[in-house]
Image (cartoon, rainbow, N blue to C red; front, side):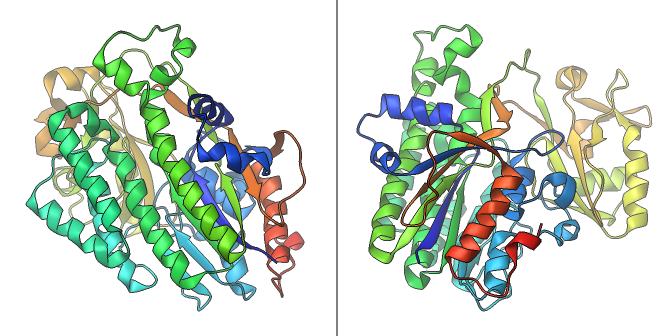
Length: 463
């Protein structure tokens, strides 16, 4: 029976796939799709859709109303009744390897986990085996420093980058990174594409681990296309906004940004299929949801929390919590006790702008000692740089906040994603039939576990 490779292509819908095929007639993806099975996934998650919820839905075969995983770095014990597929496989005696799958921290403590590099928001740099922790340290450092904006780089960053060679990053990728940084120096527009470079580095780490261990099930996650869609959908699909591309460097450059991100995926897919054909793997390409056009109206500079210790000190919560990695404008906090967590929730209305608008808002119910809050935009703060704590004006910097400006987002989440399976054990389907993600994933768990010959697991009764 075939083994399985999963490429988790975050948030890519069929429209982007078709757009790419239209503009890249010689792309490898044309060849791949000829004999692959095609489906359209449809997540039934409730509330606002986010990848840190929809991927657990796919991994676990249950919606977020069951697994209750709704934000980054939350306490995930609520989802123990619906374990992810790699945990089921490892328990059934099959070998697994994970690289970057969202909400996969900490690394599995199981002899059948041949490698496990958690996601880029992990609260720690532990990996399995330890040699990949050099990559994860750099990965988490850049995520924590850059958040919503690409910062400058210096000698320290270069030294940190040198550690990547110990984690399997190739010389070829090293030259790519250097070339890109030189492009940024020559033309600042290239800075907007810096996040796509992470895909090269992470894929090298995955490929190194894959070649050395050859597990029964392996998965790699990439967000590089999703990031470009969020920011530059308008320039790939101007008709969605009744917009005509301007004859400007900005419009011309970003009309190609999604295509350039897909080029990276296309190259990596070709490498994976060569390996799959040689080693007897099936390949699955999947997204847990997709994106579509969104009109956001006037752009207001964003308030970002940089220093939680300053905020805690001024609000009277020194030592009560620490800030974990999250995606702007979300903030993930872990508290020392349930009492302190509840006190902080009650204190949130104390912080407002000059018009009385609350600045920190709880987005989801707390889980264990973890809390997710959102930093609201405020035109008043953008103009004055002042927040109000208990009606007292305080400069935003004295509370640990700063203002950032970035390209206005023009693409956002919608429930339908893609699913491609190519190989000896692929399901026989035609067209792009629509399936609910939990139902499909439940069936997929069953297919994978039985295809890989898993024993001791009655997958039909797990959900």
